[in-house]
Image (cartoon, rainbow, N blue to C red):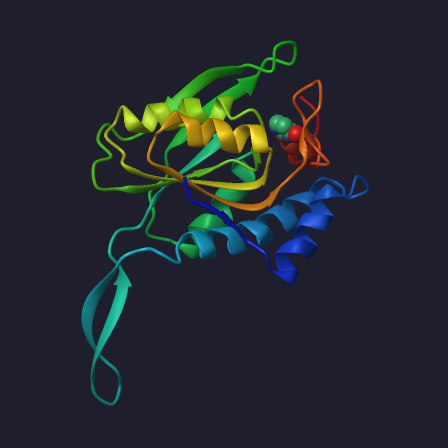
Length: 207
Ligand code: URA
């Protein structure tokens, strides 16, 4: 599986803001949005372009545009804070939704919403979820996408645990990962360490 770690001084600065426990909800949302811009920019670096013939004010010109905008799939709740910025970068993108809660006792994913197009053949899909911890939620989402014939899936995450990266790689599904950091691992409660805490609570307050 291809893992693309976005290493840039600006990405590192935003990630530090996200990790800092003194950053409040508004500051967290702003830093997440800004970092999403960098992650999506990187994720699109290998996107296919289509040739378009246009005219500048001076002469004809052979330009390019994205051949196919990705379907954006934020995983609720934490992925909500990534979708506006991703859409700002690719305004023509469509958006699907998957809702997955986490059982705090077992750390298992509890799906509660799925709103996706029926057929994703030929569509690149970007799954937006800041945290790739055990990989359970991401794998559930990827399975929903593969069942709809998706063959080109990118997980766009802020922080990943090695356990989650391994789970994606072992799944054999057609997925690559674009991420700002692969952290040390998971603690006994399946939180990523050093991590940034609960990405949903940090954006929106506790449930
Ligand atoms: N989900 C989060 O929001 N944070 C973690 O550290 C792990 C899963």
